[in-house]
Image 1 (cartoon, rainbow, N blue to C red):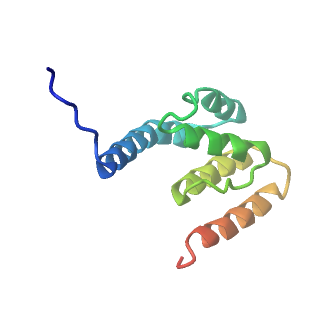
Image 2: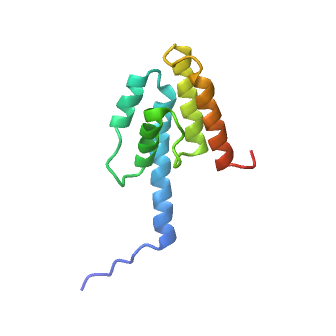
Image 3: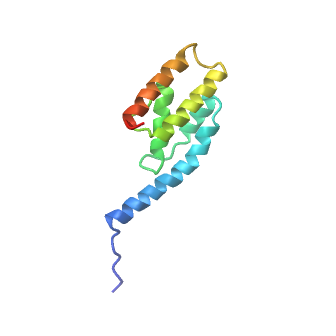
Length: 119
């Protein structure tokens, strides 16, 4: 008779999930930070892992952002910061309509306040 395998505790499963998410962020973040064009951004979104995979939400959030340059509800403050840096690079390269950056920044400022009211 073989030994019984013990099921992992909920806290152990949660810890594994958190660590996998962290590794996914550490893989995604430098790519996000290096983006210089909208085309590169689209290629990054197309690299998304399969649904329900660790890190999928980062790609989904960024894909949502690219549709209208609005903050995704599921995004983190860190993601918002990188999205703003990216859109500022696009603006500096002359890729945004005149005045669009101010509207985008205002939307993100409001979203960031809602995520962190103590800020």
